[in-house]
Image (tube, rainbow, N blue to C red; front, side, top):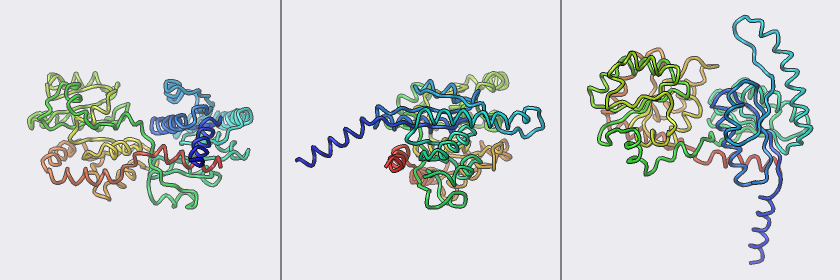
Length: 382
């Protein structure tokens, strides 16, 4: 029994250690929410840990991170605009100011590790941290890496990824497949079906589809469903539709009485995503990295419509990682308005295909991604 007591005492001492962590990056929810999930996982095991986020001034992380209970510092860093603009003249000066500011932060905090999740802020922060011999870890969400993570990869000590075959971009010996951390409360759907249909005021005996185009909505998905909503209603299919704040009023005006159908739940944003997932028989989604990770964990049949308006067309690459394993159906953005609803009805009608899609997508789910990343962090702590 002595060894057990010694082991437990050691674990308690470990949990009480004061670790100092910088987590940097942002710009989109796809970067921010994994970062918060990593921070939450560290805090659960190391309650005394000091965690500082470093983001970019004016970006959404400056709002989302404090709401999650963490301190954040904003750097003035900006990327180069693709169009000709005078703002580009300020970019080098903002970069220098950001590097100097990051250097002060790292010197003052003396972190045990610096973690980057992508975005311009992480470029400055992790570059400085690695220069000061602080261990660095980067987490890449997509199947095609962003510019920042590719640039940081040579100096990083560990690279946590969600997709295979990224040794094309990163040093193979540094890569660990961990999956993408997601907010667990979003994908815990077991036993919530009855509550879900009550929440959305829908009929549990009818087929139900869920349309999610990200927190801001997606024009193509909205146009596709708007064009053929009557087809879905005629087939007695229920619709839970997250359309985005900027599209809600125009959709209500264009749809008229259809928007008020008892088969349609139309909202700018769905706060109870766990209930939306629980109610859905089929999900229609963009193919952002975190959306893909969530639908894998949910395990429902999915039709992916990748956005073409992203760097390196990485959403198509994310989608193809599933489609190539018969775990999702692909509809191209350019074809969606004409084809999406017909594809929805065909898929819903094919129970064997739905069962197969559900079976294969569950194989790709990684439920403990944040815990796997914490293991890599602990290795770098020694």
